[in-house]
Image (cartoon, rainbow, N blue to C red):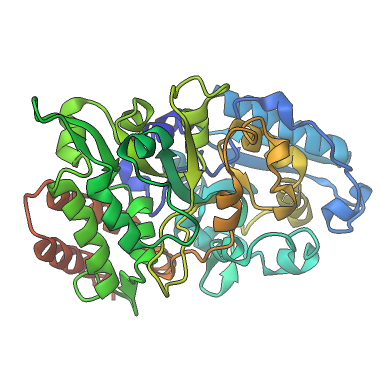
Length: 457
């Protein structure tokens, strides 16, 4: 698991609570600068869906996870909301550990908070205790008009909207420009393909002939599911369709996993066994100049760049992910947002709070810290953030419009995502380490995932 996750999360959630593309705080709007969000919001009726602030009244509770910085930021956010809506009050409930377990306990006791944070992969599990947001979508149509459709779709379950996303983490490729220069290889141009990537693997790997040690690897390969979702989708693969796992039968899946496995077995990428034995994860290997290409979400800006780009001593940047020719690119972004309890007594206050999370006050702290990208596209401006001058963010802005892999959405909707991802990760690690073949791995994933999916039918 990437260092960025531990930096951002501070949740202590168990792996069983994680589902596809999980990174709770990466998509939460977490910020290391809680005061930075208090800038340039009109607080006008236009920004709240045309509803007068005096008309919104009632007391609600808002639950979220996170560390002390997160708590301070959220409390300030709730206070700011209450200032805008003088007849409404928001009590912030800070849940530091076992977040989803505690939400379930509160729901069973009839004490579920009126509004609570979540991520798209958890929408299906929380939908039974949540209020559909279809009427919110109509009432606040002007507020959500700049949100990419794929981001809105990430909050859907069983034909209705249940989560309003307020932050996302598009996926791109971080590159070490100096390795490309040392290898005499040009940096890939826009529109590069998976075939181009495969051709680069031996060229961007350097082994010391005297010691046999690898000086640098071409690619970071991980069992983190956002990574393999991206490669599978950009090969045109579909790993879950019509309620069944299709890893062993879909050619795009086979091509993607074969490429990633061969990269590890041929020494073009450090295998999971190598990273474990070295005590350095892929992110740390990239930071220390040992990896040329590192698939990375937007949240890695926080850990790679830091406050002043002091962690990395070489010239680096982001480029778009490769996509096989003729395939529409996908983006398995991490989307975080909020849901509303079906039993809330004050839905109008809850809805106003949801809308407020999309304002500049609600997103700029996280954006400026490099933790998550706002869902409102009018803020896609690199001049607003301190790292815009040094890094190319256009690829992240572009990726926000890419489709979320339908396979991942369908798996999420099945309710079997968490267990399935654990199976996928374990099987792929064995494959990347050379302990079983690609064919065995894909068949094992299908058998085990389908057993889970079918057990309650």
